[in-house]
Length: 297
Image 1 (cartoon, helix red, strand yellow):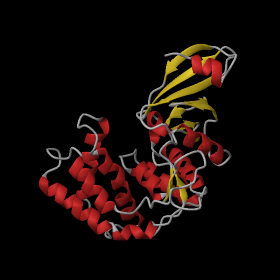
Image 2 (tube, one colour):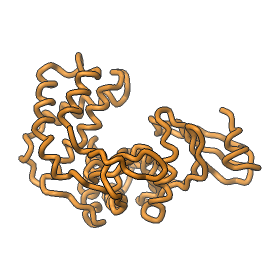
Image 3 (cartoon, one colour):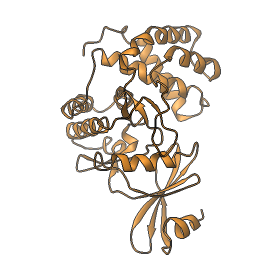
Image 4 (spheres, helix red, strand yellow):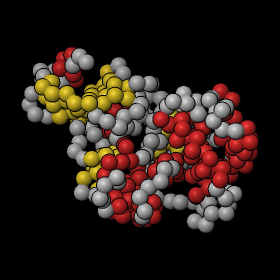
């Protein structure tokens, strides 16, 4: 990999003396660079859509609200940010850790993210961070139908499972009106691989390229999508509430429905993709759960 852009444009006059690939990025390629003055940065190459402008703007918008790496430069398909210390939460949770303290810190961090609001719901299209006005929690039934029709579910979800999923989406679509017009900052990939921690506290929230303006339940659902160590989910919700996060009536059912936007989208991936099979498993879990309204919050 050439470091010409870093040495001539992003950090003119400085030289890369060491480069080390970082794990955890599935939508981009991350390399930690050490410069000749001893400073460290992360060079990100976007593997899909170029999210550099949005991520740079968001890093400025949330600075002082939650810990984020400072973006120092963006280029075509690349971004350079300051390196922040910490271990990925996904690694910490697999070892001996204070799960309750971690959960509370993660919940409080998410609540602070939600304090950033916008003039409308929608998706960001550039550095202005002006939402496009598209309601993120609308049309779940149509979205699921298109993902099943155009994706790779056949042969992995049975016909009866696909019918049940369509029925579930149709049932939940009108109920999601309860979170329409939400205008809070949503990270949209809020899970342990995008959080760094130091001493049981969140030290950085990474990878903001999928962020949008909408309902915070999107991030709650993402964090609770996969099984966590005993006690983590309870502490996470406790920290979220203590930090000012709001869980509306029926939030468990609503969050599961909101998470289906992502799970259905994963069905468009090749069956060999790591998220495809995980999505199949989570969808089966969803269909096996009790009917909406049965959960007690």
